[in-house]
Length: 398
Image 1: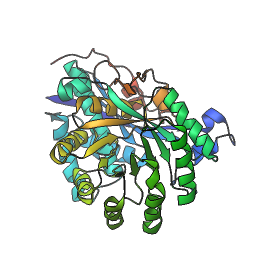
Image 2 (image 1 turned 60 degrees about the horizontal axis):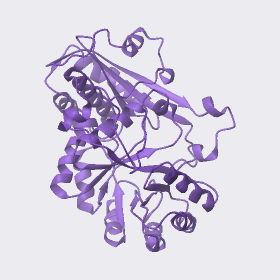
Image 3 (image 1 turned 135 degrees about the horizontal axis):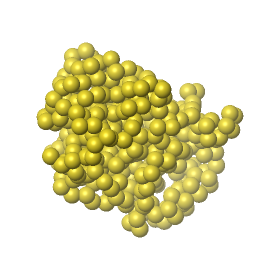
């Protein structure tokens, strides 16, 4: 049993202007994808969750932070922390399920409430693994295996030759597959796809991510335009709840259709499988954390669908996703995101791609991710300061 002493949520924000200065942020960072055109991507955000047990051992979790880390932080502070502090729980799944049913009963099957649960679940699994003296992957399966990767993103660059050069640069870094952002109109998309395909060695997997840019007619035209170019998958061609169009695209596409980045529950992913989606692409900081990944692993074993995890977030989310891929049988591919993010890269988690385009998850107990204190808001709060301090007692196996 785990006895919970405290649950703390902290907003983390790292504006791009801190790196580049006002007025100097590169356009491809402000508008890296189809859904960041009028509303710009101004930086990196997340909500840190810190769960401390009665012995002072801490587990760290992360909630997806877009468009703002505020809502999930408020839900954890106002709802989850008061109910969980002082409680004894048998497992992360037990705690997750109780809150999950509560939020579903209030109609919160998507968005910040589910993201808050994902962050809580990750923190509880991290805490449980630390107390057991094991890595998260070992807790999940008893083994730790290298994780196959693809590099992302080739963002919205102006010149197709720039896109081709970025794709080749990823291959030079040891990757064996690359993902391009699309969604600027069929003609422009096809021009950039053609340039990359002509530049890369034949057979190199090329994934495409439209970030829900298209409606039905243009999405169907895109399928025709992409047909000659050996596409590994087209991800989120239409908005997540346009189920009729998604089914039609799955039926007509000469390549795989992917989706699930904006889904949160097992039933939502089961619906995607029923529609014909063959690559599920969850985000561990949205889709019920580690417990959610275990449920998707079971779904994949039951249906034969592929599961390729998203790699966005801070070092906590990335480390957790890698351990899930390393420890769960059917989570077979991980997106190594290269969008500028000091909260992912400047926290002492060294991840090196091997010659086969794979990497091992962080070593040590738990998931191995480290909070980025420099990006945390409200660190003047004494409760937050205590939560971010190292554990007073060593981790122990029980």
